[in-house]
Image (cartoon, rainbow, N blue to C red; front, side, top):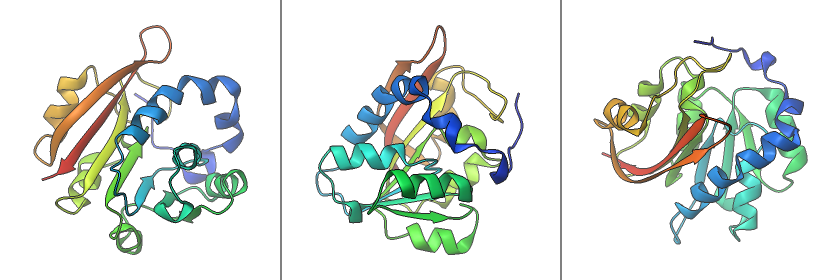
Length: 187
């Protein structure tokens, strides 16, 4: 198992490498397909350098329909640089002010986020009932993963008390490394 990284340890440049941008494209494309046609606003929790914002823009959504949140000021600075017009805020998802800022969003998106935080269940539990949830988790360990999931059944078992799952898909990253993408609704 890896460990919790501090905000200062995340390097935006590492996320800009060509291989990192391309191998995750199917995940981003699927996540966008899970957004409702009548989307008000999506909260992209752990948005990093704003890759999802780019995909949301490509899909024809307005910049006002997106809010990116990350605890790393360096990642948010890069996200703002790469995605002008989109809103990004620095903050900790466990902070009440951040919870209030994203409360009006109808979709909570967490792509490659839950494996990096200390209390993933607390994050899922904090999502208001009835909100749409889109998230992705890996089946492999990494130096910054505090958890990973063998298969989709383990994921649905862990979060099933809080999320009514509607759909999922598995994406091959490299060799036996997979990303599981889920769509559901907070119970």
